[in-house]
Length: 110
Ligand code: 5GP
Ligand code: ZN
Image (tube, rainbow, N blue to C red; front, side, top):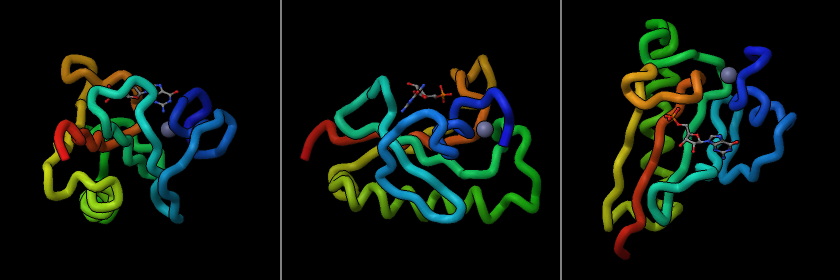
């Protein structure tokens, strides 16, 4: 938990958000400003600042994000039509929330 981190607050339910999925390690919710009909944020509960900051011991979290992405794509019905998975890394890479998250974007066509 990082005190002024929005995604930590969402994970701790200090800021309301509807979770499409939750387990001990991850939450999934919709992006507030979707770039496509389906735009999910897959977020580890552990506060990791960016792709630059994850430690080797966090490898299971990173690979877990991709397993989760496959499942969420299926659940959202975009697995066959196709989707994008995206990490924005640091300011120049478009990162604005400094709590690591994977964007799942798709649903342009069914
Ligand atoms: P980044 O640019 O850091 O990779 O992505 C952050 C994403 O979080 C943006 O796409 C932005 O629309 C989304 N976002 C920012 N604030 C909120 C919020 O309060 N709730 C939700 N659901 N998404 C948010
Ligand atoms: Zn955080």
